[in-house]
Length: 84
Picture 1 (tube, helix red, strand yellow):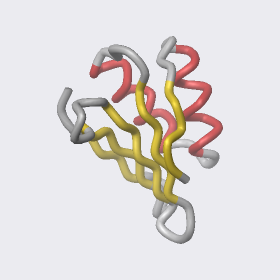
Picture 2 (cartoon, one colour):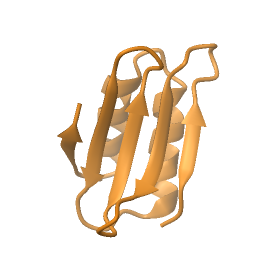
Picture 3 (spheres, helix red, strand yellow):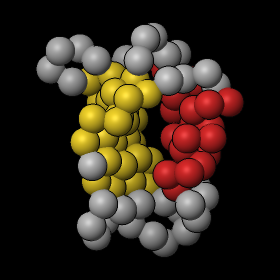
């Protein structure tokens, strides 16, 4: 899985990204640009397209984190929060 990064289109500083951890696990990173930074580990194998689509939809909403959880659930992608 490669990297993908998304910034909020509505002028906010919200950021969502996909990265590879050193152990090879896929991680999702959220940063609000001010105080909150959260990291989740994707459990199992998630298709790159499904994960990218979920992040793209979430970062475009005004409530990024709740929308992210909804979009991951719709796509049957499970995550474990590891930081933040």
